[in-house]
Image (spheres, protein in one colour):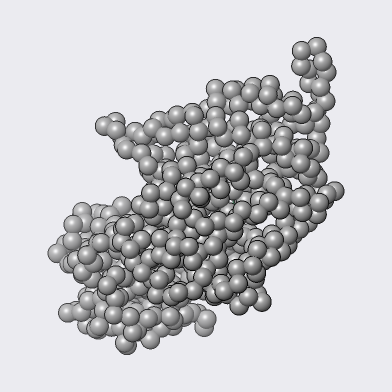
Length: 537
Ligand code: XMP
């Protein structure tokens, strides 16, 4: 049985990070709303209570009845989790006299406590709370203090119940991973056997028992998530999976043919639908970005549904939804963090049930799973690409000719980026490795990757609403500029413009202007998100 740790979500944005850290320890975990603890699941080996934007005294603060968990499973409360347990078991929590925020050091702690073993004296931790514990319940013992926070950590005597007011999951808690390892491995007894291989094995079994002998439909986009989901389903149920890949005519140069070829090589049963004529006709003369998105979304659903209806006995719709896509729906405080962009929609009258085999995975884990199943590297490390495609990268109205111009410019940009190698070290190397890019640190602590793998996403934008004068040979030109966009990011929620090397930009600009008829100027977009967005429309 796959062991798991349950992380109860009380609304803090770092709860997701706790999940990441536990996974990095080779242990499967699920982040669930605070009130959805699976009491009857025998595979749970431990519980972590996360932080919260609320104070324990707020009337709307989330409450949980721990009576069926305490004494049965090891519990670790983090920040609000620690304050909450202290509060309900008879301790005292009060507003802190000064805000306890930022770096602090564990000046005194019980070095042989199972939770704190291996930590160095003065270990740096990260605090972030407005309230503080001023008295712990009877039978609880203080096991760590900082100069400002007396009850930085506590344990219930003789019980497997701990609370820490700092955040071991964040980068600035330098030995936070050691503390989490102590809890997850030593205290909860994790076998640390969760890996891409074990994920594939258990998920294939799960899919088989979930869908039985039914037929499943899946919409492919050419992106990593839907492709990995398709290969996983194919492994589980073979040709009872039918994939649909809609070409709206605004994909990258040769992308439809290339991706169809990749899918066929992977043994997928794919129906490719060339619906570009319909999309171009419906987009004719449309310049407003939202209008474009609405038309594409609507047309996509129509085309997809028409194909899906032909698969008569389908009972399931599979999607490549991954964990970060669901944060919004899981966000229990009701604050919208990210609005969903995904086009497509459930063909309602077909009464399909949803199958989302990647729903617990982070992006880098999806990549590892894809690799584990032998998918080609170019499919796995592909940059994100918006559902409406180049339509949101052509400012002004969209014509097949304009799409062709942008495809050519974009192709030069991306190909040059794939060929250009960079050496990275330190933080930058760690960020790229953490995103799942395969590279080995050499003895100088450096990695060599392509510029394409260094950035999160890149693409060209055609500004058809602007024309400028140029000169080519003896001829005056009066044509459109292309803007190049490249960003670094970890989740697309915020992004910085990538600092591309000048020689790379010089080559790309030169090649685009010399080879793409209709473009006489190239600019580079130096805006970060926020306040700009990654896509121009
Ligand atoms: P923005 O432009 O909002 O983009 O900063 C954030 C990320 O989302 C991608 N994006 C989309 N993806 N359908 C998608 O599947 C869409 O309509 C869409 N719009 C933007 C964008 O490429 C970036 O990765």
